[in-house]
Length: 246
Length: 221
Image (spheres, each protein chain N blue to C red):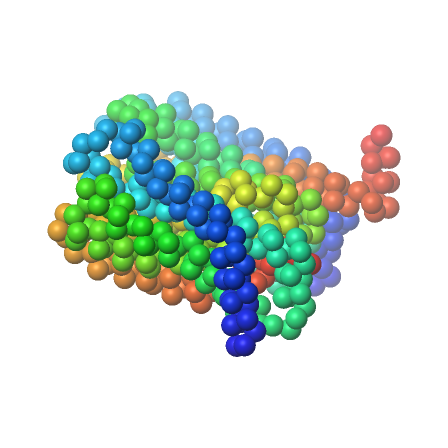
């Protein structure tokens, strides 16, 4: 058990492991996303108020969920990196940051598209929308900091600190934006109180959320493999690996 | 304690000998606030309504101007290395740097704020609360900013990156600062906002110096 756990910390072991897992992950991701999306878009009943426009929920909610989940995950990985100096935790944290930013962007974009038919406007300065936008800025800051520092040993340390500072701030930002919004236009909030969903609408959503988590892991592993090759490029096994491919 | 005192005195002396670094953010502050009436029109009602927000945003941006040089000169001439290897209590050193930054950048702003409030047609009650909120909020801006400055001190052309990192973290300070003034202008109770600003300041004062010290160790090592 412990030996297996220690092996997980070694890039040399994880690189081929991810390679073996990837086809399976890709298969299940595609299967779940296709089932969930087709079910949601074609077979789930239309909403009694919003008609068919509500169907964007099957893209919007999973990506919004992942946008926040990824940031928390990065912070957990950063803590692991600081406490146990696990190289692989650091690498994975750096690898998934752009994926989180992409999910945040998708959540904002689909939210805007959904907002037009539902509220009559693409954007409202609502608490949730605003804190999601700030979350996107936090992602940009993380990615930019890592790339700005040329010494990657230093860069990852700065990245960890910023990730932890960010995750302490996310609840404060969320709470304060909530406070700010309710002060100015409290009525908007009631728009967000969702009626509890009917099971035939909920199932495709749950499938899509699971599919999106798998999509995140699949892309994360692909990026991790890339990252391992780049940062271990001076080791013997990477040279052999690359020659093998060439 | 004596080394902290020595550091504060040294940094203050260095700051005062470079008056342009104190004056430029101030002039920037006044000029930004002059642009707003030109942009949105001189009507007193509109100006009084947006004044808390724009004065706060202008103060925030003016604070940002001085931040890039907070650790940079010390980093370039090696004084920061000396601080790190000197066996001093690094979080305390970081806090004294923040203190000097606050004295040199925020205190002049605080002196000018009532004047700017008057020019924006705020009434005295609102100006009083604006001043109070800036008094509690500006140390927060300096502390959070120092964190960003410590992370980016080794980066070439780090000032743009610095604003990208810390502007999102300024959001809560801005919200509670301006909403206190808006509440006061409408004759409502503003104790909640001021109390939350105070709570955030207490949290930042106790935790941020440790983080700034860790960030400095990373950047300088």
